[in-house]
Length: 84
Image (cartoon, rainbow, N blue to C red; front, side, top):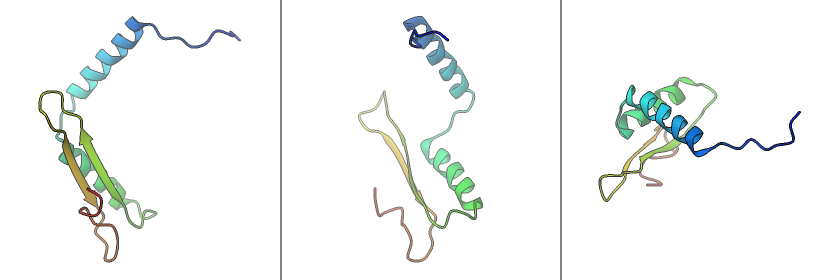
C-alpha cells in the first residue's frame, strides 16, 4: 500500500471536467425540468412522506441564477413558497 496521497494533476482535473461537460451536454435540461424529474422520483418513493427541494443553476452568462423550487404538496406539509 502506497503512503502517497492521491494527488490529481491539473491535466487530470481538466480531462475529468471535459468528460463531465460532454456527458452533461448529452442531457441538456432546464433546472425546472431537473426539479420535475427529481420530484417524480421522490413522489414514487412511499418511504418519503414529504419533501421540499431547490434546483439551482449557477449562471455564467447572466447576472442571475436559474432556480426551481418544488414540494410534494401534502396538506399541512412543505410548500414550494416556504423557503424560496
